Amino acid sequence: MMEQVKMINPWLHRFAILLAIGALLLIINGTLGTSAHQVAAIILSLLTLGLMAWLILVDPRPASRRVGWVILAIAALTALAGLSAVQSMAPHLMGILHACLAPLFFAALVATAMTTSPAWFRGPELVYDYGWPSMRSLAIVTPLLVLLQIALGAAFRQKALTLLPHVLSAMFLALVILLESIFVLQQFPAHRALAPAAKSLLGVAFGQVFLGITALIMKSMADDTAPAAVATVAAHVTGGAVTLAVTVALSILIRRNVQPRVEKEDLEETRT
Image 1 (tube, one colour):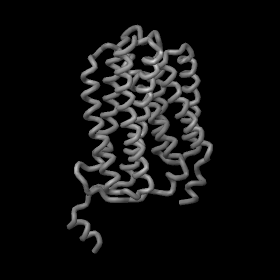
Image 2 (cartoon, helix red, strand yellow):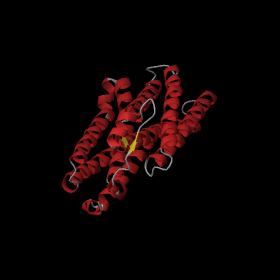
Image 3 (cartoon, one colour):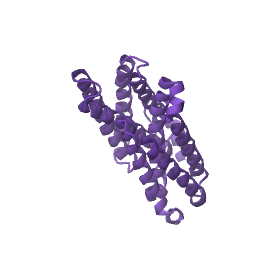
Image 4 (cartoon, helix red, strand yellow):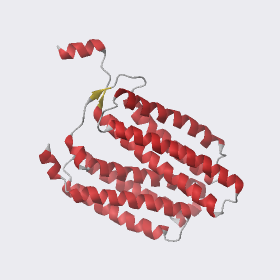
């Protein structure tokens, strides 16, 4: 296993971290509406092309190469949806699409940084899922719900929907994240990968709820263009991207480490 660690250049992992940080800063930049956003997006897209080429040349795992192509495709779609000429044709739709693709791009870069780290090559710590609903199914559903929540928030900012769907979805999503994190911590409190990821998701998710409430209060007290309102909305949008990234990371770890539930009879049969 240690030989596998040496197969991956540590600078590839560091470069993926750098791009993930750049993607997050770009999300903040776009939320604040600064003029340098498109230039920064082009630079990040070119660097992403370099990451994909590096993954193909250095990382022998087929899954990593597929992820590289996915990242490049998301980056291209994000850039296309963010172009002023494209947004002028369907401003609401393109605005929502761009607001969804940017956090997805960030989450994909975080996943790449995680799967190219030395810790990843130590191998999984296999455990069995014995709860209901299964953690493996929650690992699929939860990121989709987070992405839906991001889309509903973007639709509200684009004035395509009222605030109510976003608020109701936030309440349901908070419950799902709470259940998933508690299931992980209750079943595998000492797991070296799952437990820290579940704790991180809990902290990020409830921090995001606090930011959402703060953004609503600020928007009710001041104009949308007031610095305080702009800053809180930017923080909330950024928090949504971080929530998606941490959710995706936990989902990957669950799918890697948690085996499907084994019935008691089957488990005894396996042991014999």
